[in-house]
Image 1 (cartoon, helix red, strand yellow):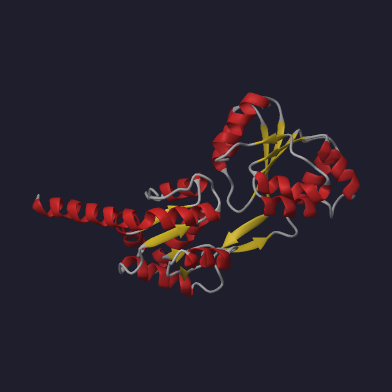
Image 2: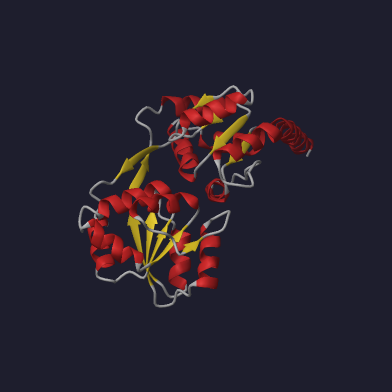
Length: 282
């Protein structure tokens, strides 16, 4: 089994090993915080001037980074007081938890599975967007679908970048994972975020093996996805995950893999053999 998790690398390995898996850890991401983000000062100034109607928070870590950066440009008390007057929208419990040290609470909570679609639907029902000035805390890649959906509804949208995802400094484990996938030496691939598949295929492309990796993930390997957003990223590469847990959390993902992967692997490989035989017969 290959895990591409980076931030919770050891947690993922330990959880999988508890269920008897032999785990190959191949971290696919390196988080780079934008400490001097060009977005931080304009955001802080606009919030304090009452020029932002809503703040959409997508991740817990990103929320903490954004508020910390903003507080370097305006007095914390002034910033918090201004934020408290706004409509704060949290996509899941982690951003809400990151608000607590500042004494802030979200006014709108997005229901699970907490994708951008649920977020937009919640705003449609609770907080009409037309004419509103909305800031989105991004984390890594821009969520273009969300930006377009909000803009189409008449909102004036500002995207706030607080970090970027880069390849690990040591790509050796990723290269080894590529080879194991194309050689049929892996049975399960575990993805916990969208950028992981992008980086895996980037490294595979450098080795001239990107098409082979896609084929392996489609035909030969049980592909497990943390949740809807990760599944969408896989889908952009033509890969439909075999396992997606009911809740987008690491523990739920590991449990789903432990329960379902052995049976799914057998079915998947049998189906691929049958399909290949039919093609040869033609």
